[in-house]
Image 1 (tube, rainbow, N blue to C red):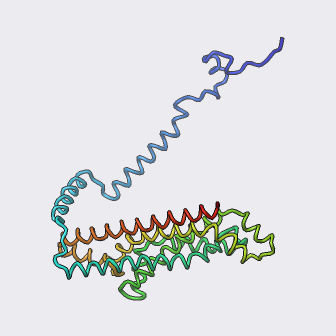
Image 2: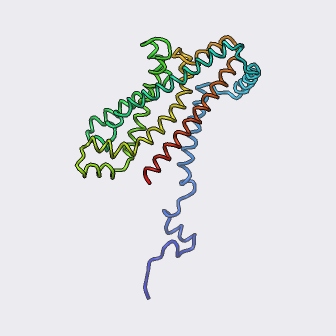
Image 3: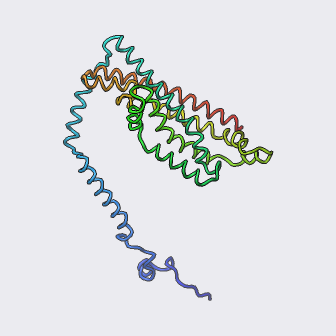
Length: 290
């Protein structure tokens, strides 16, 4: 007869808990850490609410004022055709700011992303410096960059283009470098094995893999930057945002709602266009793989 040591599964629960206490942690001990984390987060949340002055009473009063303003915004009206054409031109200016800023950011970010990618450049110093530069640029919001560029080049859409381009260069640099690092090594090694140099490997082995992904990201951010260009226009960087700010100060809420409606239509059209282009890019990429 073979002797074997008893296991917890061979014993009744009471005996097993007595002989193997470590295998049966107490509910209080197992849930104590989770409870402590929950209470700590609740305390931090309550402290944050007290710091920023969050109050249910103020919120309810604000909801009532919001309803009153919403009624004043109806029906949307620009007043006359001259105003409508002025707003339409400013909206076109906003779209132009977003488009030019996005393209400039992509052009600047791409070579920096190559330097920041481990599978393209093995120099740790260049890689580290490129990553930190992208972090610093990305850490400042478009609105802050708009204020900076307004003081450099003056008021107008040029400052808006520079603000969008600067802020998005850091974002694109990070996204592009991650896409490059996630690319397959096989095509690059295939180019090198046939006698190609590093430039050929990037051109014919790396770019065909990552360009569709990069174009899709650029199109998405063009749509997002249209909204950002509206915001930076409020501080004087050109576009439709300045008109929104002026009409709010003049209490012309019907004009404000008309401008917002124009922006929504423009964003919807840009979203439709960019979605179609992204699907076309994905389809072209899938056909190339086949």
